[in-house]
Length: 290
Image (tube, rainbow, N blue to C red; front, side, top):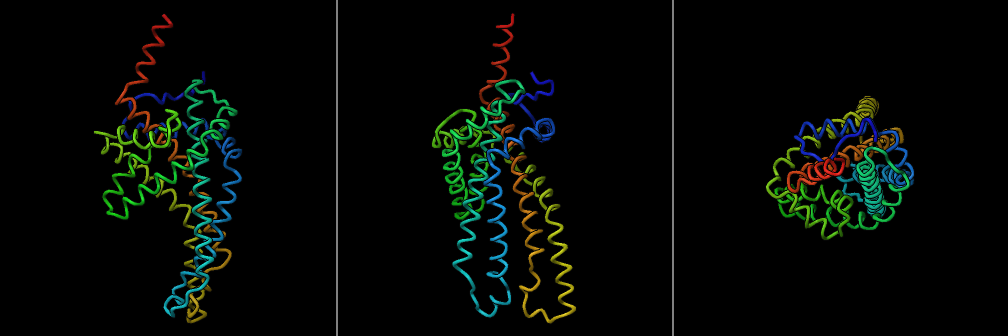
């Protein structure tokens, strides 16, 4: 058993979930990243390339000067860039989320000792279901936000737990979605509060990674303003900005690791409050040891 083992199957308050999330990453971050390189490395590179391509196309397509002149440029290329971003992000997030959750599942089963082969095999087996669940849960949440902002927020809470249910309970896609609503019943507000605090924390960290691109764009804009009349706004966007923006996006994508670990803790907290499976397992293990 790992001496730094963190018990997932127990009740936690909001602060404990955040604290244990970072403690888990501190203790297991290196081996988790090595596994992620094997399962998600290629999709991550493709996502970065798609992100750079999208940044390049969007800065031209959304150029305010051209829009004011009713000039629509490369609309087809913009659609391709957007599709590439969405597709690679979906695949990368599915693989990352599946890897993290299977890592945690093996971690729990072996009391802190992770079998990498078990993790990779689990990711391969569930890959199709995870991608399908990601698309479907995103669609459900998106429709909720389109209909009205409040339903979108309500649906986001159970949809954030569907991947944990799929992996930890080995359910189907439909059962994972159905069970997510049952799991948050009477626990929606505390779950929402936890996700909100987590979201704010991730947003703050993401903002830090965005600073270099923002500062560069601002300084370049000042320099151009002193030299030209700024008739061509797109001249303030160059390959340095695209590189900085892409690196910023890459760092933000890696923050999904924190979110995936935190949602696993949220899932087990809710599951323990509903079913007390962890407490029952501990009682059973004590009885067997005696």
